[in-house]
Length: 200
Image 1: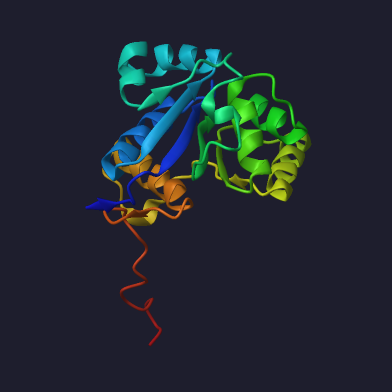
Image 2: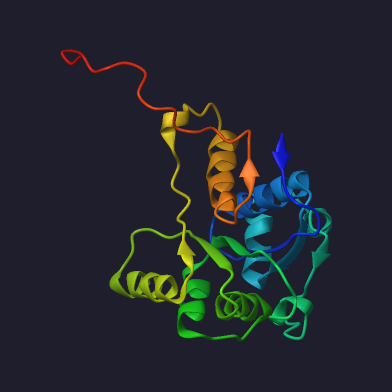
């Protein structure tokens, strides 16, 4: 079972970085939790959807309660007076990371992220890039200093995943719990069961 209080909202951003499935998984988990989701997808994110999934544009939109055009900088989520738990960007491209770090609000996704930061709400960026150069790292530091959370989608193998979906679900579930949500089905580290050979 998964639980969330009624009336809660969260913004989900999807950018053009590889890992479109993370955003889809987040929308599905949030729907199961009963949260109201506000989706914004960059143009590059739409291209990645075509490359990495079989979901149509309409099928993706159907996973969210409200979908906002990337160019609509006057949308609800562009204002701090619109209350949300915060925003998850999954996946987050380096371009989006850099724009948020510099305070650029050229599109609705970066504007919404900027609003979340100024209102001191939770911003979680699932940055998908490797290797990282110094500019990437400095952008991560800048966002962290502003109050954001950098959450690269690094798989946890202590759960003994049996499929790619297992890895995606565990990774996205961990990211969503940063918003104070409880996902009871999330696999967790239970501690080492036995001592290593030669130790007592």
